[in-house]
Length: 484
Image (cartoon, rainbow, N blue to C red):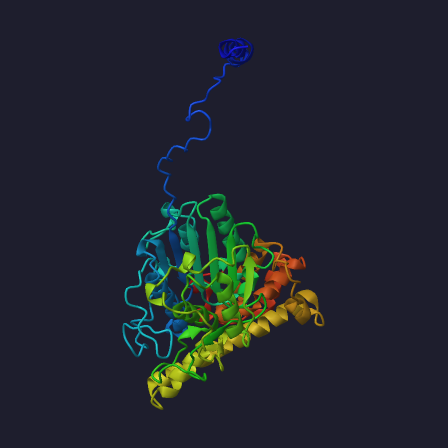
């Protein structure tokens, strides 16, 4: 067969059938480069920009009075750290009574320090909510971004978006189930947790961390804090112990001699002094927790609650980053000693004594200072003895003390009925006078009264019996306001 015959045979018997099959399938037999899957992929179009993450902070000093200098000093110091870290004033909300910098008791008018050798931390701090604007209601409204519910102040709120990070720092007196406020009522655990749940439901943040400095601060979250809300919490103390004031006149490292008050709090100065000396792009939340826990350990047990899945995140995601720290090679640094720290509940008495000792002997001012000390101590004794007597009346002479002091197991909330707890506090204060920050140490007793089914009528009768004839004087809740 010659070549022309062979070619014709191939065309008829080979290639034409292939063309027919391809045509029937609707597919070309010969693929162009752009059709065969081997051509370079087209250049991608511009990608959508990642949504910006804004860092928010809420800083709360929940006390007033120069004797509580340390709480506002803590908050002012925290602000300066966040400001250096790049957070904007529009994203930092500050609650402080603002009565210490220019107090007549302040030896350095207009200046606030948080360390014996520290610089002024007061200058530049935004005064968002001061004086009678420092309230639980405003605190909750700010967290929820509810500007219409805020009363007074700058009306600045946490108007956060789904990708944003939030840092909350609260420093104050506290007790089982509550954090104090300078204007009653106080922040109760159930209300605070409810607000956090609402914030989570609004999908208005990505992650949140909360630092709390207060006595028995663990009780705010024990058995209440959800673990799936992207909120991580550390507290200065567990649910049953005090937190401690630092840089006090009687300590190994005291304040300058002209100061009669404590400059800071143990847990608070520990986290802030750590943040100031480390590159926060290299230090994790977990690492700071361990540093603070170790330094505070001789005094109280620093605790953690909530969602622990993002503890490895770097701190700069919440506290910002100070470029001046970029060359730091993170390593453990020796921290000032906290030896001789003062129980938070006794720091005010220490201040009064120091002030009394410095006054001229025989002066009217010195006599007035002594009367104030005596009245304060007598009211403390009255609170202790009254609650002890109430316990014996409602539980019996033998069981009273143990029933009042009983602590629930780990993971259980302080009380089953929080409304009952608040009612019992109001009943007691109405008959016996304001609890004061010292008397808050008995909050667990009120919780146990509720947990054991004592009625409001029984509590009122017992309170009248315990406090009949007591002159409340300046501790009258009609003047000071009820704690609940």
